[in-house]
Image 1 (cartoon, rainbow, N blue to C red):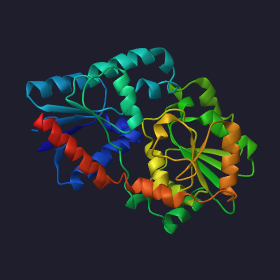
Image 2 (image 1 turned 30 degrees about the vertical axis):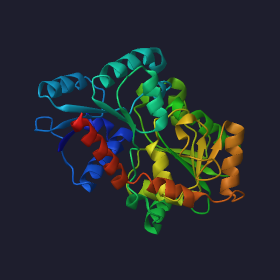
Image 3 (image 1 turned 180 degrees about the vertical axis):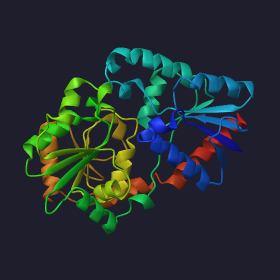
Image 4 (image 1 turned 180 degrees about the horizontal axis):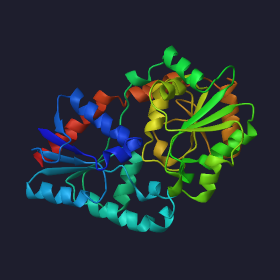
Length: 333
């Protein structure tokens, strides 16, 4: 068995969740001894396609011409496309049509969560659909004092309490609520890690990132390596008020880091994220503000150990085993 992992525009997606999904897939297949290639001109048995760019249709046609099996990884939905880039809501129906057109050409579909599986089924796609997490590199996000030191030194953190979020500058990611909570808790430092070209997002969000945010909020852009890994395990809370996700790899990263996680109560996190068990869930600015303050001041029980267990269930080797099962099923079909 040899698999072609296809990600169009690797450089463009490298800093996004799908870019991390690419690395996780490579590691997952390696963990199971499954041979793979990233070169579309190599020989292969299964095309595992992950992107929906202009080369997607030609890749699928070529695979069909070669009589190869196709697994489509459905990272995108219409729902998580909305409230992102400029004009995203206006073109969302066309985006959905393209998703249905491409996904329907596969033999099997993989998507990260039971929630995103339900969404794709609701599009009328009648194919085997498997919910498999994007996975998490547990070792990379172990608690590490040296990384915490790097995080503190990078931001000159002394005795401040720090709340972090990681994501693109999208309304969908909950950036407006993040700012409002920061305004209500001026005694804490709020850091939003992530980047997207400012010209591609609405002016309201562009202005918030560049100038219209309180003094206790920092937008450092895309940060990698020990600093972000130290932030995950060295911050006082991970506050992720996203309104729509297909999974949220950054949530897995926070869980793996033994971090206290505060989420918006949305369907994608059911049933694997349980309020007051492995995370805390809020609904609006009022509830988020109280949860952040209570977590930081340790008025709520620490649920980070249960969060780490949730991440362990989605380890890279475990994802590799599930991918193998799908590959074997598609070859058998």
